[in-house]
Length: 412
Image (tube, rainbow, N blue to C red; front, side):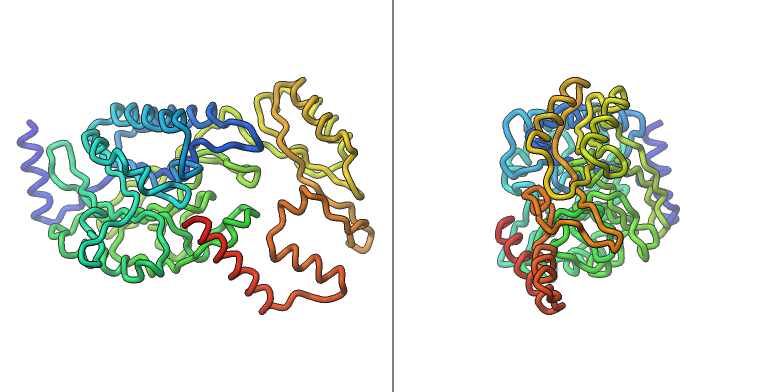
């Protein structure tokens, strides 16, 4: 029977029938993340167990992890064990599935690839960095064949880890040309990249997120039937991409700016056709929540928490408070105590200033907590406004460029 099936697949290729490739797209796991001093292992382990179940039920041809496996370049041994144990279980859930993992900006390319040859034995391709011969990138390392149960090629995945375009200005052009040369049977091709694409929606006020290096979607190439993106944590299919470019989003919330539904993406890819996309929601066993929904005085926040203690149990909480000048000195202690009583975890405050009838803030004092939440541009704007002037556009762009340079040097 298997030989008959193999012959049928070969016949389909010869008469140019469509071959569908089923893909599970996930990214931005950030394993080892610490949220205001709290370990996230319970949520991370739960996500990985759910991912294993999804693989077992969906039986995809390949699973793509589009970067940021870890939250820091040098994760602890326990975090690495969490990752390796989970990957072996995921492989066993669908042994014919090809797994492709690329490095994100939070990963160490060398550390991620250190066991690359061993992972190959489990049908896992790990692409951390770039190798060169005579100054040219070894493109074959970045193109992975996706095969069916009979060993016939169903399609290709081009895997591009995080990098700065100034270091590899012609990478995407060279990669596209290489794929055109080897794809003799006109099979589906997927690009996996950890990159920030212009026009993507970022639901975060993080300085690092705001000052990322962006690139235009068309710079990635035009031969791909699906583009599996990582880096932006908010799940979205990019506009003007014919529904072919998508951020699947982070697996669980890594900060309080990500209080939206998290999921993995299942994609059916046919050559030259619009991909069919569906999402499978991930349940967070210990979610992050900002409470109450609308900011109010600290005492009212305490009342809200007590009234909703059953729903807030086992949650990481940020208190949404309004203040006139400063919070009471014992606010943090009281907040921690009330969370301990209901079985929740107090993390921080989201502070909002009370405003006058004219819309101005009653007090211009900025607390240390508020300062941490500000970008350099916001700090400069507030300072100049208090001194009766406005931040010019040229000065604003200069601050942004300086911040980008500092962030790049830090990441490098």
